[in-house]
Amino acid sequence: MSASGGLEGQVGFLLRLAQEASFAAFARRTGEAALRPGRYAILSLVGAHPGISQTALGQAAGRDKSTLTPALADLEKRGLLRRDRVAGDRRSYALRLTPAGRAMLTRLAAHAAAHDRDLDALVGEEARDAVLAALRRIAGGWGES
Amino acid sequence: MSASGGLEGQVGFLLRLAQEASFAAFARRTGEAALRPGRYAILSLVGAHPGISQTALGQAAGRDKSTLTPALADLEKRGLLRRDRVAGDRRSYALRLTPAGRAMLTRLAAHAAAHDRDLDALVGEEARDAVLAALRRIAGGWGES
DNA sequence: GCCTGATCGTTGGATATCCTACGATCGATC
DNA sequence: GATCGATCGTAGGATATCCAACGATCAGGC
Image (cartoon, rainbow over all chains, first blue to last red):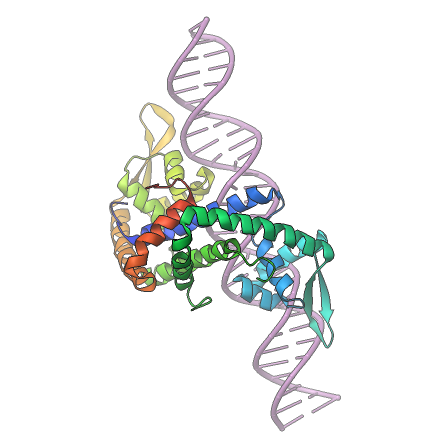
């Protein structure tokens, strides 16, 4: 970009392209036609925090809580997750994976590990830590170390 | 993520968070309430390639051509860009910035340079090149070097 | 107990994305 | 010149995103 010529134009643009390419490669790898954006993150987070609320899940996922409404409905409909009302607080749901959800998460996690190795090959194991650290800083206060 | 535990879960997730944070910071910096996703990229690319077609622009921007239709209509409506039919090919438009569009691009480019320096401060000048190279590789065949 | 402010999750609306298909147009072939 | 395949850009549809506002519910203070 002759007019801009800076890192921002490039890093912002590259971040977007890299994010889309990474997700597309991951989706291809899983062969999961129904793998939609955020599903793996949701399954991972709920798996790691059984009983988590939708508000807390949204915060952990970096997504608006209203974005989760249809995504959770989809996962529930597919039998991968269930929502139970919280005792003593009829406003809230406790989210938990079903056995099918755990099985799906296990499969996706295996694909994620393989995807991880592909990314290592792309980026180089040495640069990996630097890239992760840089992304965390760019993301801002996320997992600061 | 206890279940996943891999780079993919993290790098994919981090790429998304980093991309959103970078754009949000850039938008705040420009103070341009009307700065919407892709506008800067479009202005930059059209500025650098006067006469470019919508199809070529979509390819350069990494966006579907149908995504550009409303974005270009918006920029045209705001008087920042104009679309002229191509002589000898009534299917195509030649895209060009207007003087107002060039002025807008100049302002945004200045903000982009400042944003660039902020990113340098976040990432560290030394890591910068490594990060850019890594993002290019992850993005796949984009500006391979 | 009643009142008030806060919270949870949903809904509606606006915007952005891609995919498919379409009409208009072009280029090559006969 | 007519035909056919390809291209350009648009439209429709589906999905994902966030923001604001809402109804139901909860907690704290009086």
